[in-house]
Length: 490
Ligand SMILES: [Zn+2]
Image (cartoon, rainbow, N blue to C red; front, side, top):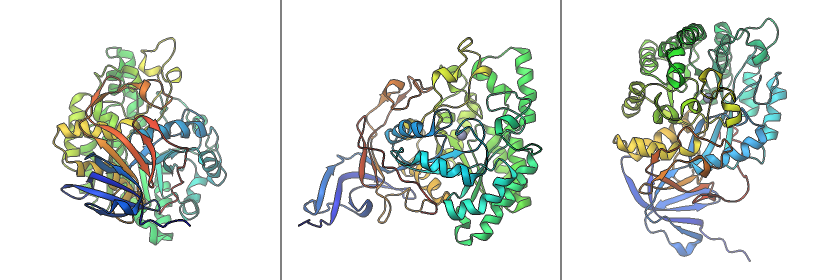
């Protein structure tokens, strides 16, 4: 006879960090059937199948890393296996990934009704954490598919890469249609973005019950500005490395793109707009101006942990090439000030595992314009935020809003992002007194290097639980990949 215990697991003596609160309380967490059943001091441990003593460690809600690129530079099934282990190490339990047709990823074009089932098949059984997808409508046919993607596939967030139409992912480009694999005669331009927004607006109208979680995300940089400045920087040859890349994609290129995106949102009444990975003071300033100009648009602003922890003088050099670029220290401090002033809604990793042999040119490894864009970092998202945010006086509760609750709410993960009865038992135990020095060799990611190498972080993720199951324990991944597809709304 199987005994029915009240709890499958009690995590005792945890300092529970909840978003939206102003205290961190020492509590026991009772878990049943993968959900949080109760939070209270001194739960009856005899009624639990298993008891774990958190020994006063912090318990954060499992992180929602809302911006990852699993499968961009490595086969999706393999990348899911390795990079979701890095996520688990970072305390991430929900991985939301940007996916599109075209080069990289599955390296093919076509309709999402053919493409996306393949994405799901390659993902199935390979993620150690729960996972979902944002999709980018790259061509006309994809726009018509938006309502179906919302209604049948649980994809409620869509992306626009504003510069892809005439500037390459890694630098100058004369023709992007090969890269994007779009049909002859179609342009990936501002008019296309307008019609993407109209498609999203239509999906909101057709799905009134889901309208709050249907949104449009934008990578805001302006191709024309970047192409012109890249030529100037290369011709002048004054700057190299990260500073040259920053000069070649100047902050006003972000500011202008944000203004264009915002006006299009206003014109199309596409009211839920996510401004992704803002990297500069000018980008923040533009976003602030646009939210004053268009108060009926629900803007959300995102910042990455890379832009918060690195600057153009960081020793990592080309390893930190990313779009938008890593900026000078003044911009980094402007980002932190915006975080502290609650002008940033969430913080993500923008994890894109780009191995050394692919990342830099093997003849000229220091030539930033020959390097590829993107790097991993999901494994340092929480420890990095606690380390640098803590120095600046941020509360743990505020941190939990930024990496747990806010992205969960926006993207329709109503059972993620908090430690409260009825929520998934996604819990991260963190020791805020145990520091470590970042070293790529300790990460399960296959990237092999990290631009954060050598940074001294002050907090360590000790254990990660996904729906009540231990998936990461003190340096080791536990069990097999049991992540579930997050068909939204959850
Ligand atoms: Zn990205």
